[in-house]
Image (cartoon, rainbow, N blue to C red; front, top):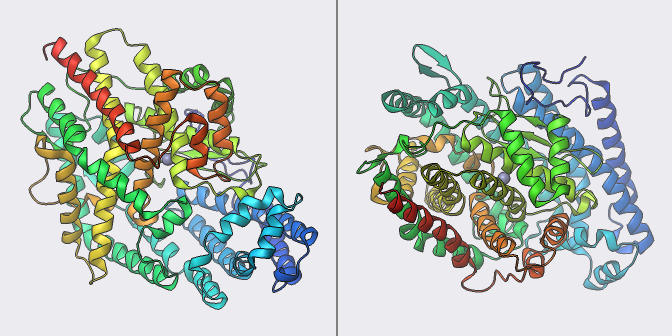
Length: 599
Ligand SMILES: [Zn+2]
């Protein structure tokens, strides 16, 4: 049975049949049996024996682990992708949960390897790291060792892994399914979020306000259950962090990012100090150009009224993105071109599909996939370029062992945000009219500000909510209030928020499914601003090769090392400010243009 999603009228629906023909494909079962066999083999051969392993035997163990992880990743990613494209299908839900349950059972058995690597003496580790045969696994060994300080007893670790599918994962799944079951009444008809968002995006004036009110109504009616889920997830994280002796909620993601808390603090403080000069100044300019004293919050993402109504049908977006990629790097173009041609991308908006966007890597022998809900607005074009940036990155590092595929979020987002910049330049290059150019600059600015500044407002919201949760459960109203306060600071006086804090935090899926991830966007945004500046200045020779090479090594080197070939040092005090200055320069240009046009 061919289960890939087909629709002859839309070229942007992905084809997963080269992975499996469907959830009942016998190959899924066979791969699972293989995964099970390899896990048991690893367990029997190596459990409790790592201290005595000779390097040659350690090499064989890593090879086996590599093969096991490769097939495991393929099944998990397929199940997840299939599930997020069919959220309302009971059969698919059952299939997905079945995979999660079986995997967590087996993973609890397997997890002895990272655990035992943590227990190895420095002498053994140094021997392994110096060994030529083990050289290709050195980054993975170092990655496991990074968590040494926070190691938990083996038995506790097993319980944590086994119970994950009934705690964190279960509540994340509950969140997505509850959110997808929300319906919005617009003009007498009921729509799911994706469709309602599409109508909202294309609406203006009173109609737009009515739809925004409907979002507010639906969120308010359902706020209690989402507040419960959010409270459980925060508490669950606190328990897990407590067991691992992680004192700060960002510790876990910082360990993964390989950065210290101080760096995040410096970034956060620098961004907040720039609210006035960047985000607030931007919205002031936008309000002035709109001839409004204040922009109502539901109109914040509307293009300025003098902008030509510009939409980007999928085919148009494809051409823009491919041209932009080609100008920068034929290699990047080649990957993206195959992504379009071979249907790696699922862009159609339809009921039962997860909202938002993402790219998923499979393994080194299989291409990645991209999922988004394409509404043909500027924002969607940006999102498509962003996710394709991730997909290209996955392909570029696929020559590394799957064990070394530990790219941290801050570097993953560099690959995606950099591609957004390429597309911005491509569009700006083709605009001749000053008015149009100004409208476009404002769109670009809003997206840049969203990544570099607004995500820090979300980070501060998460931090405050989490700190308060430690003292007890938060009501839905309190959660809304905290977000309202952080947003007010970010927007300043030129944006009119609703008088009563609304419950739109419900739609911020990262706060549920990836807590404390948001700051990674801002971190990556800062790095990209600096990288893009040296690219445009032509101050670094052979930039393209250096950049692509950097992407192929994101799982094996720290961000500081990776930025060295570009002469960039993120430990310098003014590094983040320099990045933000790039946005400020864009804003200066927009203000200059508005004065020139007497708008
Ligand atoms: Zn991303």
